[in-house]
Structure formats: structure tokens, C-alpha cells
Length: 252
Image (cartoon, rainbow, N blue to C red):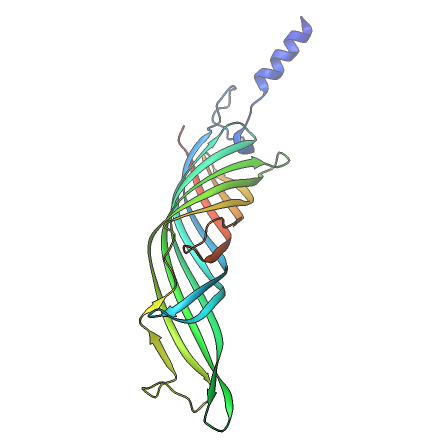
């Protein structure tokens, strides 16, 4: 009988706190810690593009782009559900703006009838995209702390895109285009059709911080690993090293 009483007292005084936050909703036990939250999310990513795709001017090959760099910004709405005190699932709808820069230098053989030489030309592409993203994540708390590991998947839908193409003469100094300039905008640049849908696994780490009863912030750092190419039938993979901040409010 004594053992049963002790066991019941342990059960009565035990509170399973989602996220490890012991929000004091009542001075008398038992009370219920919320496990469903909605919030807003802001993120920024540093992007690295790797590939081998051809750039053409009006169907005439100019160069092949191999690498590029850029950044992304995003804003979204997020829902998070804690299934138990150790792990949670989340779903986020996000609008993302992506900016990418490519450059490639080529040598063009020349001859003045006496001497053979090479002219150096540089091609640059400034590319912008907007996508709608649906991101699902699984979060698991580490060592009963506010740190957590993240594993998820990012489904993206391309809304629109645009690009500016520039050709410049680097050398020799006396070489110019027809209009006597050394730089021009390519108006009929071509580099393949975009994939409308994208799929990127997500892996990273998260820290939760409670600042009011029923409110907490989540700070995340993660990598998006590209499975799909940005354009069809050619290699252009975009890696993202992302930083994210979310503010959550309980809804139950």
C-alpha cells in the first residue's frame, strides 16, 4: 500500500513539458502545457550553384557556366505540433526570393594577318527567381536541452524568373564591339528551360528560447541538399546554407 501511494504521488507531480518549457499556467497541479503553435518565419541563405550548362545568344553557343553564387530571402507562416516532450513536426508555407550570379571567361583566337593572339571575353549572368515553398520538418530535442536536430524536405514551385546577360571585352585594349563599346547587354540570351518543381532535403540544428508564457523563438541553421536541377536536361544544382528565425504562439 505504501509503495502504491508513493508511485501515485510521483505520477501526480510529474509534468511532461513540451520543448522543456515549464510555463506556469496554474499554481495548482495538474495543468496542461500547450503542444500546438503557429508563427511567422524569416530566413536568409547563402547559395552555391554547381553545374555545367550552356549559355547561348540567339541559339549560338557562347560559353558554359560551371559555378555561381548568390543568396535567398524568405518569409512564411509555420505550424508546429509537439507529439511528445522530445520531438515535434512542423509545416511551413514560404515565399522565397533567389538571386544568383554567374561569370565565365573565354579565349577567342584572333589574327591580324601577321600575329596570332587571343582576345579575352567575359560573360556574366544576373538571375532572379521567386518560388513558393512547402517545407515539412521533424525536430528532435538533444540531451533534454533546448537544442534540437532537424530533418525535413522542401517542395518548391517556381512562380517567375528573370535574368540579365552581359558580355565584356577584357583584352586586348584596342578591341571593341561595333558601337565602339567594350561591354554590351545580350538581349537574346538562352540557357535552358526551368524545372517548375524542386525537391531539397533539409538537415540542420535548432535552438528554442521561451520569452513569454505561450511564446517562444526558434533559431535554426541548416543545409538544403539539392536533388533536382534548376533547369531541365542540364546540370545546375543549388546548395543552400540557411539561417532562420521563427516566432511561435500557442494555439491550444
